[in-house]
Length: 207
Image (cartoon, rainbow, N blue to C red; front, side, top):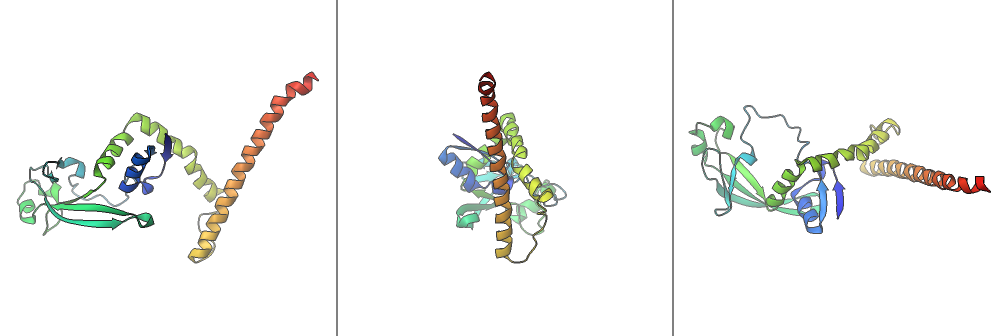
């Protein structure tokens, strides 16, 4: 069993499903870096809608059942495809609902939701990331990945690229990563060498 720690930007339904399939334990928040301005007033979250498996649709907090209105294939990173189904409540229903301010901000349509083909594993992953065990392990990411980012920015001056164009940018980043990797290998080799010398010292002294 392998553990994988990643930033939230790399956590998609496809990635979660793939990790489950391969027996990998994935540590990474689901859309935790969404920096969009919060809506006012706050709307009901997707988690507050009840999934009805027998009807294959959702029920809103006001008791209305959403209708399936479409199905689309979304292209993710690496050309991978993810099937998403869209559900919606009629606008006329939402607009007369006493909970409308929390249901939708649309002046014409009703509240809509999207459900990924990997929704079940996404929900299970969200619950897993809320456990103390997962939070404790994920905090270790700051001791490895985040330190690398800090090193590149503070010690290597990589706060902005020195040239223009994708080719030059990729080359500069590749060289920075190469330097970082070589330094890590050098430190590892130095520590290993010192450890061997320390282990040999008692023999030398005894001689």
